[in-house]
Image (cartoon, rainbow, N blue to C red; front, side, top):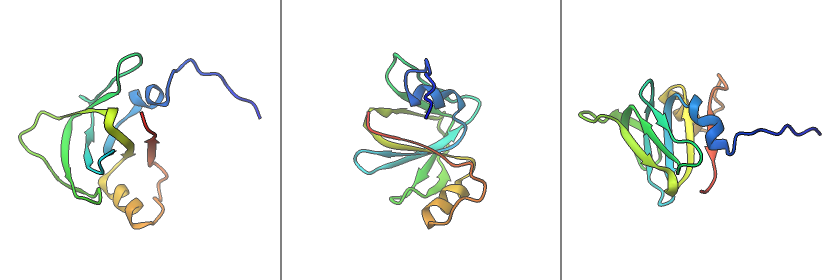
Length: 116
């Protein structure tokens, strides 16, 4: 097996610039946060601490299902020091497919997981 060296320091730095679409985040205390990463999103990079800014905030229920968009906000900033997992979706319906145990037909779902 061949291994390719990458100068990118972490998986966070690798995927961060490409984050787009709907983001679902599970915190260490079991709370779900979520929003949309669009043109105004920002993901920090090494050597700075892990943070993400999402253009739009959404309410998520206790099971992590997307609800309505939170109105009257300018976005959502998240300090990622207290998260367990980040999941990326093209649409909220992909998250629902994953939650139901059905495989996503598009294969576009990505997940970045791990403790900080």
